[in-house]
Amino acid sequence: LAAVSNDVCALKFASPDLRADKDVMLAVVSNDGRQLQFVRDTKLRADKDLVLAAVSKCGSMLQFASNDLRAHKDVVLAAVSSKGCALEFASDELRADKDVALAAASNDGSMLQFASDELR
View (cartoon, one colour):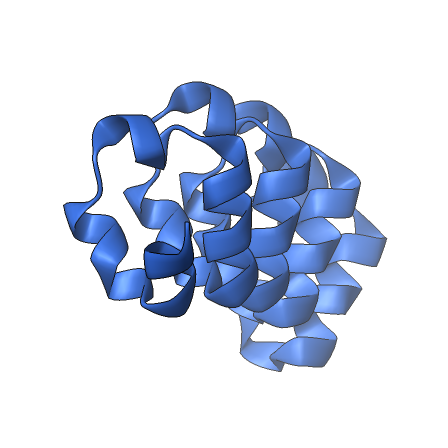
């Protein structure tokens, strides 16, 4: 845990068991949200706490979350507040949600291109 918490690049070389450990991965993505892309365990990609920690640091990591979490308003709001472009990876329903689209636009106005047609 200490190795991957201090040097997230070490995660690429960690064992699959270590990369499937929620506590380890939570420590890693809390430090560097981009590391969610190295999580191969689908249960972890569906873990709300883990994904929230990751997208709060780097919103574009929403693309690596489960479909259920891409449709979870709290998760998507955290992602688009961190990086407006995360709207591209939100569910169709949330791309049509006014609150979500406004949060993305206030982070980066050009991200309204990913909002539903009705909101544009």
